Image (cartoon, rainbow, N blue to C red):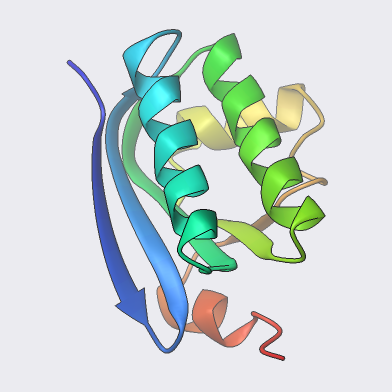
Length: 116
C-alpha cells in the first residue's frame, strides 16, 4: 500500500494528512516532494498528521528528520500530530521524540505555531 497525502489549510498552518506507509521509495519521496512543494509556495508552518500512517521504516524516519531540518533551515516550523503507538514507540527508541514537537490534538497543535 502506498502513501497518500492530503493537504489542507487551517489558520495559516498547512496540514499534511498522511496515510499508509512511509518507506524507502515511494512513501518517503512523496513526503519529501510535498514538504518541498509547500516551502516553494511560501508555506512555512507545516503540521504532519500521522494518524493514518501504519508503518515507517528507517528511510521514512530519515525523511521526517530531513523534512524537519529543511523546514527549520528556511525559517519555518514542522510539527507532528496524532502519532500511532507504533510510530510513537519508534520515535522513542530512536530518541527522535525529543527532537520533534509532537501534538495529540489538532487545535492545540495549530495554536502552538509561532506566527510572525
